[in-house]
Length: 155
Image 1 (cartoon, rainbow, N blue to C red):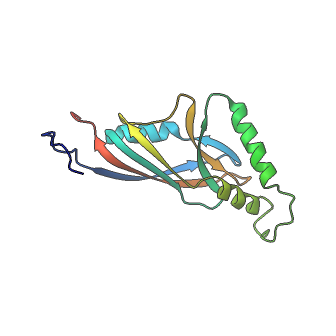
Image 2: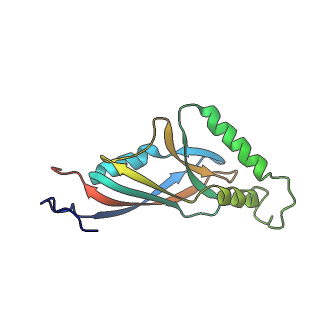
Image 3: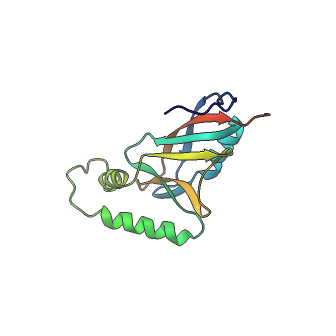
């Protein structure tokens, strides 16, 4: 279908990548929204798409409510019911929390795609971006960030 000529050149596509390293405190949710917003601000991001990918098989990413901490506690309890420690898993050489961590990562997400509007992730009022650590002890996790889109004009 032909497009109407607006007389305006399209904004150039900007691509930026970064590795975000997160120290977890062990099993649980770590909010990373602030770090992501700070990175987008440092880029002078305008409109586009943000992709996040956690490069691990025992951690995952989610967008969840960040207002009531009971939501995260209930979600952690639900994940524990899905993949309990006391099941007789065949893969048990790395500890009782390892195979349940793989299952929890499988049923959640290792990547997210989030629209960016006016330089910020287009999240709802009560939404935050979280890294979920599925292992019992603390780990250093790497999240690959990728932004594709326009930059704010005048910056």
